[in-house]
Length: 295
Image 1 (cartoon, rainbow, N blue to C red):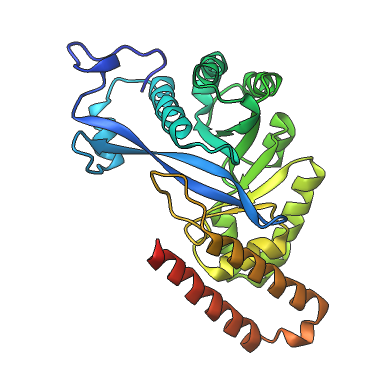
Image 2 (image 1 turned 180 degrees about the vertical axis):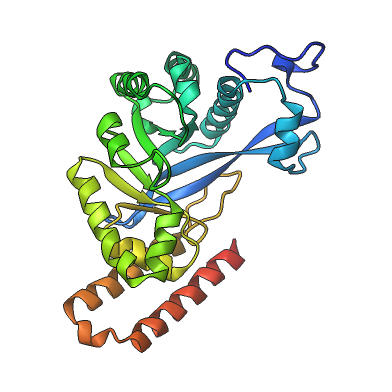
């Protein structure tokens, strides 16, 4: 992996990247629960062959043995920005994943230059700090503060696993926290965890951050996220990653239906028997599958 890392001796291609592979970008939409509207897109790296065929991460990283994390991180970020500005119509944020080691390697100066080069306002960019044992959390907090000074928003990814917990929220004070799918799975499958998830969201709100629930694939998960008070939702249920910027009106319709179902259950619990909720969920599942088939 790569901090300004050197390419292996004799490695061909720009910056030592083997010409057999290139990094493609896909964008997955995020939706606001409160306004039932598109909030932005997360840029996701997809390694492909020169012919455009997808390859597995193992093959990609094997080809990049000897590279350091910050360099791969920078190359992905540049590919994302270049693709985004060619498609952008001025709607929503661009969420960029960044590895803590890249952030500590003065990536913010690079990012500011790249944004200026592409004419993209820092206020429309949010960097997602990935989970990692990055070493010095104090230095990481300083780097995050530098992002804010540059007008760039910050999200903390993978909340609920390893080091991504309330201590890290307090240290980094992110604008957004993305709750890991593992917590959502527990809440869907366990009544006690389902009761606890709203408390987690409430504490995050009290800490001054907005909450994104990611990895939503089915209607029960979407309803659970909305019941918990999530500000934003993301996942295959609302939109699969695509090489273009796509917002599906049906995703907005699904959010509105889920919000209505939540309101009914809160106002008239007696009307929300397991059978009634199951029937509504079945209709939402069918709608979600129809949306996926149409895409």
